[in-house]
Image (cartoon, rainbow, N blue to C red; front, side, top):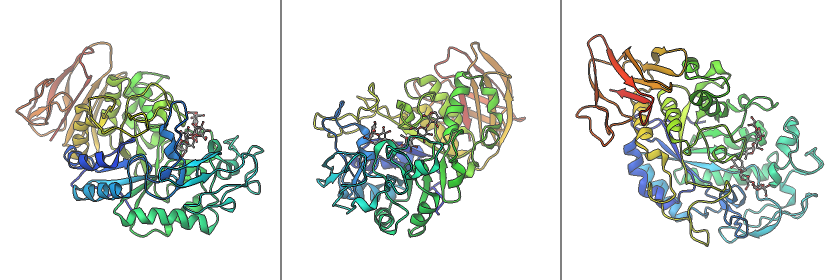
Length: 477
Ligand code: AAO
């Protein structure tokens, strides 16, 4: 399956959670300028619509497919195709969040494209009807292969339950059979043919690796595939079962990194010197990494414990480290603000999503924070360069270079730290990209802390005070 082969040395993806296709299309040129390689978009297929939920129109209705018609809360097929072609022209790839493990929950209704759906009976496996695919009862796993009495996944220690029973009641497709596979493969091939470059495979843990391999194997166009498998240890299903077929989301990464930044659970920044495989993570070339995702930032999907935009100072530190450190393919989260964990994106009373206005209203746009997008620039400048010149104070202050391309210093101590470092950088003047607009003089920007001078020996003296807005300095060629 395809690698992610970014254009122009860009090497980071951004998840524009719940953005409309029209907004993504009009932002693609900007995303390219900021150095983003690709966008993970919310699921584009037809989904259930829960107008009477409290709150109405929850974000998670999009994880309940009704059909593979590409009309969703983010827009219709024409808007989707326009986004893909506009972004491709800007050199920005589109990755589709792909929900193929299941269809809706129980109940019945009308989907976002107007199709009827029926989830059937809650305890027997009869009555499922998704006429716009079409799927009927025989296309779902049931009592013959799901060993739980409820029909749901009640025990994550039981592999047959996890893969053949219903995830939180969602009607579980029988992907061991050819027909359902053909339907989901047809959906994936349709969007590949429109120019989509990759897929996030939702709930991959809940599908048999062999079934996924068969689905992927029938696709043409070498899409990039990364699979959502929540593996924090302690369960029989591991991320490693999926790495031969594509990348896998490494959920241990964001939690461990958040602990180090917060000095929580016995962790500290100094321990990050070997962050990666030595921590029990999958191989870096198999991993997609992120600080938080759309689930765990709001307590879904094994949430809690990860840093989010709600703690901006520490969140910027975690993202800076992730983007400076050469492990995995990084994904930057772009959120909307919320109090209720189920609340959908900013919208009108009928569930029509508002246009995105970064920094104006409820769109958080972490990917537009200078401290984050300038670190995307550093990441891209340092691709392929090894970590060198590691320094730490044994606790919460660390520094390292990436070959001769970049240098980063973080001080999360309760006191100021001044140190003369070997930066690895060629002699010259460099602006701090955390506080300044750009990396080379003249150093400008409202919060800009100015330049450092790296001498002929590659050394420079840098201070970070514990009272600085951001306890990070970052420099790159
Ligand atoms: C909604 C309602 C439900 C309702 C359902 C059906 O919220 O109350 O029952 O409809 O009516 C999203 C939402 C769901 C929503 C669903 C459908 O998050 O709340 O349900 O849409 O609308 C598991 C899966 C993982 C999944 C995650 C949410 O393995 O694949 O649950 N994530 C994806 C998407 C997600 C989406 C779906 C899948 C469904 O990213 O947005 O759901 O398409 C353990 C397991 C994990 C498991 C978690 C949560 O985690 O290991 O595999 O994730 O439990 O059940 C520690 C452990 C960690 C553990 C965690 C929690 O952290 O280290 O391993 O504790 O116990």
